[in-house]
Image (cartoon, rainbow, N blue to C red):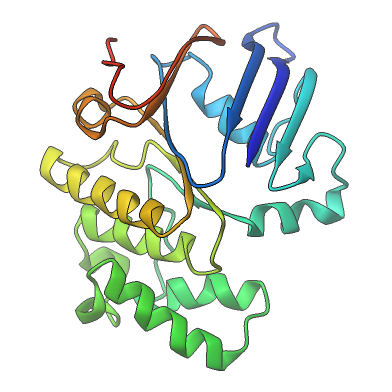
Length: 228
């Protein structure tokens, strides 16, 4: 569950990134966050992760009161969610297997669980045969699949994807979105920030549109066509 109530964010240089944003996302939803560059999408995601602090408002993620969360408790918030970025952010000196396993080691997963979970995740994203490859040996789409497997390694209840198809060709982008849809069907809440109009139109999911930091539309599946 994600709740933003009367959330505003003004940066120190005076830029208003978000203005009185009210959003409620239920468990199990698939939601697109859309808008032009500078609309506030990245700020919204940073607020959910507590990388930024709101100027005003209430933010609740997975029952965490994000605004008042103490620094020592931030890792627990972030472990409850998986994050997929546009630029993959894989560790270049670790293999595909090791990249996914590392995310589990960081949170103290036992070796037996790692040995069980990592092959399952690599199979789910279609990379069982690339487990010993390094990131530089993979295509962009394959690297994003590793990033997705890593994001899912600790069974998060929420998956946040920040422009996950931005560096991919259209066909590969669709493959990644289909994987995200499969993840959602397993019960994980998916929030995806994107510029990809064709994907938004084709998926027919809930769409929240931001414009200059304001929610200008919040439409349920099948009734909203994204226009930029």
